[in-house]
Length: 131
Image (cartoon, rainbow, N blue to C red; front, side, top):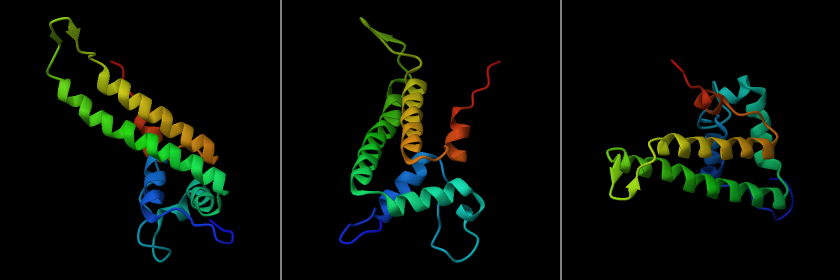
């Protein structure tokens, strides 16, 4: 972020923002064949991450905190995939899909807040084949 005395996102936070927004890895830096140069929206994302106001940065940090929790819940839900029913409890057969849809919805909200379209990794995440 620009501005006197205002700290920007860490590299790890920027990596999470890119990943949650569905954009590919940035790489080691400006030298070479970086993918952001070929996606106008990726360049916009990089600009926004470096120039958010402190209040906007705080909201973005809340988003990535929520998204990290939602993302961690998806693999945990797979622990119940072998259970169809137990006593009065019946497993939600769609739990993993429902959790992934919830995660993807929050990812899209982050993109909306940052004013960028969802990246290729998020757009393709919502594609389902119905046979």
